[in-house]
Image (cartoon, rainbow over all chains, first blue to last red; front, side, top):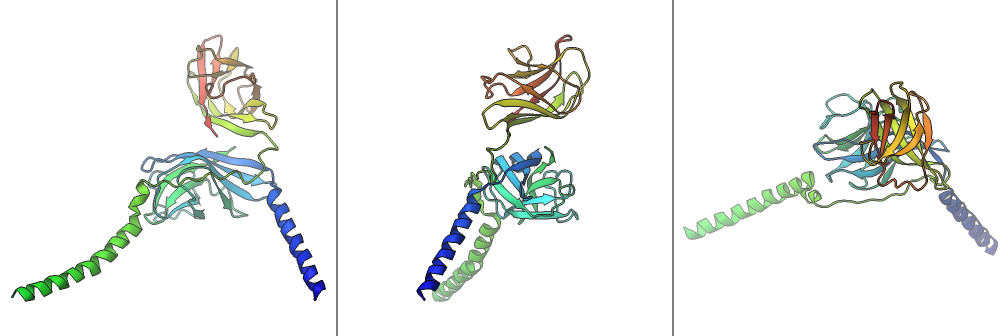
Length: 144
Length: 160
């Protein structure tokens, strides 16, 4: 009985240590694409950059970012070269890829891009208001 | 008569509340008007290691002036603190005695820093500048024809 508990403890310590190791060992990353945000209806500014980590993971990072706060705002990649103000993605059949709800309307933030995403196809980042089907701002990406 | 009117008013009040409240809630939910003056600030660090290689700190896109100029100017900071200017996807006109200047504005006469003669009118290239350069002031890259005194093109830099 005591043995089992001891083993359990050792295992738990090992797992937590490994978890810690994983969290502290941050990978290097390479910037693949970058672009600046534009948006007139909802003033949007800042920069969007797609990074590829050494492990292959793709990350979208927004820096110096600012847009207006709103309901149900998401970060999406869209299969277009750019998106005009108030571009409506639902009516047009433009493919879009959801990256998650906008974490904040101001400041630096990161979003994971699903592995296997074709960046040749998804060339624009959009700050998209799901509720009103409106494009707050867009950043066309170009090779860094 | 008065009693009848009173009960009707009472009933109407109930209807008002029963209809009005859900409508108000729905409108609030749809528009979230308080977000007009509430900002949500975040400040996430980069999820990857930024200490290993050069990191971009300033970036800008070239626009043509006297000559068609395109591409991007980026100032990188090496892990040791050293900074350099990198031109990418760059293209301008060929000309004699063309220099790369780091200036405080689009005016090439206001004490610019000369980063050296342009290495090529096409392609990616790096330039060094003095380490004491105040990059908070010098945020314009000018491609300048020294002989003809013309600004071929310029890039206004902004924080990356």
